Structure formats: C-alpha cells, structure tokens
Image (tube, rainbow, N blue to C red):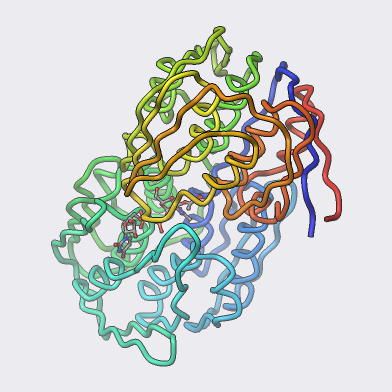
Length: 419
Ligand code: EPU
C-alpha cells in the first residue's frame, strides 16, 4: 500500500488546474447505458472510482475506451446484471440501476453495502423506482427491479437527511424512458445533478427544473448518442482553497467555479482566508491570523459534507473554538482521532465536533479512513511542522486526480512511497 510523506510548513504558491468532477462523472458515465448509440464524455477525471465505473460499463457489455480524460462508450447490447465483486468496490455504482431499469425495464444489481462514513441506505432510490411502477425484490444481497412498462408519476424523494443526490440521479435517468411525466419533489439541487440533466437533455431527454427541488421529466421513446464535458470538481477546488489558507499561501485555481462554492468561500472568509474571482480563475490567499467559524453541513447550496473534514483541519489551526456539525452522514468524523495524533484538540459531542483550535500541529504517521478524511490529513500535514506520513492513500486516489503532483507544483514537499 502507498503513503504520502509530507514535510510540512511550506506555504503553497502558484497555479493549479481543477479536474473534472468525480461525482458528476460517475452518474454521467452510467447514463451512457441509456442509449445504444456512441457517447463521448470529456474532462473525466482519471481516478480509481472512474476506472471502476469503466470496468462496470464493460462488464455490462459496453465497448469503452478511456484516454486523456475522454471516455467513449457504445452500449449497443447490455446485460441487466451487475455482480457483487464489481459493485462493492464503489458505492457510487448504485447509479447504474436507473439506466438499466429505464432501458431494459429490468436491473439486477448487488446491494452496495455501507461504508465508513455511514450506513448509506438506498430506500429512497427503491421508493422512486417503485413509484414508476417497478417491482422491487431483494434476495441474496441483490436488488432486482423489473417493470413491464415504466410510467411517469409524481413522487417525493426527501429523506431523513434531506434530498438524495444519487437517488435523484437514478430516478431522473429511469424516468427519461418512462411513459408520461415524472415530477420529483425534494430533488437534490447539487451542480452534479444539473450536469447529469444537461447530458441527458443532450441525449434527447426532456428534463426541466434540475438545480431546483422540483424536477420534471417528460418521458421519450428513445435516447441517442451525445457529447458532453463534465463540470469542474467543486470538492477538489474547495480542498485546494483550504490548503492554500492552512499554509498561509496564495494559490490560483484554474477552472474552479465560484458559483458552485458559495458556502465554502463564505466560511473561508469568516475563517480568515480570502478567495476572489479573477476572470475564469479563483485565487485563495491566507490573510494572516486564522479565525474560528461554526459550520453545519447541509444539502446544496449549504456547506458540503464532502468538505467538512478538510475544513476541520483548517479550523484546528485557528485559535478559538469552532463547532462543526455533520447533518448528512452519521459517522463522518473518522479523521478526528487522526488529527489528534498531529496535536489537534477536538471533541465529538453527538453530531458535532468541537474544535479547540490554535494548538501547534506537528508531523506524525496517520491513517486515512476515507476519501475526504485523507484530504484533511494531507492539509494538516502540509500545515504541521516536521514530517507526516499519511497511510492508505488508496482512499485519496479514489477521488483526487494526481493530488501529490498538483501539490508539488505549488511548492509542497510531498512524495508517494510504499508503506
Ligand atoms: N439517504 C437515505 N436513503 C437513500 C439515500 C440516501 O436515507 O435512499 C440518506 C443518506 O444516508 C444520507 C443522505 O440521505 O444521510 C444523503 O445521501 P445521498 O444519497 O445524497 O448521498 P449519495 O448520493 O450516496 C453523493 C456523493 C457523496 C456525497 C453525498 C452528499 C457520489 C458518487 N457520492 O452520495 O460523495 O457525500 O452525495 O452530498 O456522488 C465523496 O465524494 O466523498 C462522497 C461521499
């Protein structure tokens, strides 16, 4: 297994280009299954998660090539069956269900299981498929969804933590080929949902309202091939903005979209990190002393759960008390005990982490537990004195394209080593 070795204490300076969004790319890749015609998707990040999705598409019978960020898929004839061994590797693989059900009117997909950040149920996805007329059965760890015809319906997709991102994507994809009109209420408003709707509309779907809580899909007979460019990754961008602030550096992000990052930029300002738009770029700058801030993760356009861990590293450096409340995933605080190994003082009280910031951080070996927790440990290591070894960075490679190379380009002393 590989680790990052980081010699901290160097302010980051320079320019970095933001990759395509992982969480937009995954459902868009799945959506190519909705047509037998060729699709071309550009700006796809080269990550282990996108490579898993390539394997899943190929295992379903599609012809797939992925080179230099361009994915070409031709799903002329596909099967309805996705095996446990493929699906268990990535929770995001659940978004193949909607396209399979839409196109074949049947899908048999292994239940994805939970993960370290929480239970991650899919009851809302299944509720949505059932509302379109699918019969759902769960046997032997597999979900089977079948329908003679899918029929548009009006459905409420909100759950205990609000809307569901991949649930909205799944129902939207299935409904493109249903008979009649589907209205999703309490739909997720994330930019990744909007990007998927843009691609589906380019394929001939009739979707309006994506980006708002009410999405209307008028079913069509058939979808055709299309080309699309994936939006920039707002979570990668947020991670670099925070790394710039944590090291008191100045970093220009090429291709990051300020309009997708409003909540993050607002909280960074409160914490003493300036972010300004310069043409198509964003520039982040440490403004001197960091300040505490209180944060609650919420569905878009609130503060993203996928940036909670990285923000905790920044606030651990800010003298004073910050309260971080996690409202989306129940156990997304695995980074807390690892940050403590670097000297951070953080207590967990129910869904909140109380960060008593400003304690000096010093390098230590730490263990990455999930994707965003890994990024948080890298940020803390960059700001700490001495050497930090972040172990198990395969988690990080799932969602950050060439993070070590990008950080080196900004002057960080970071290298990849065998554990
Ligand atoms: N939920 C349910 N029932 C469902 C589905 C979700 O109760 O059927 C609950 C979840 O347990 C959670 C909340 O609803 O409490 C929101 O989960 P959501 O379904 O929105 O999460 P997701 O679609 O499975 C995507 C991202 C995650 C990101 C979340 C929230 C992808 C591939 N994954 O997951 O990204 O944290 O939305 O924004 O798009 C990451 O990139 O590190 C990551 C985990």
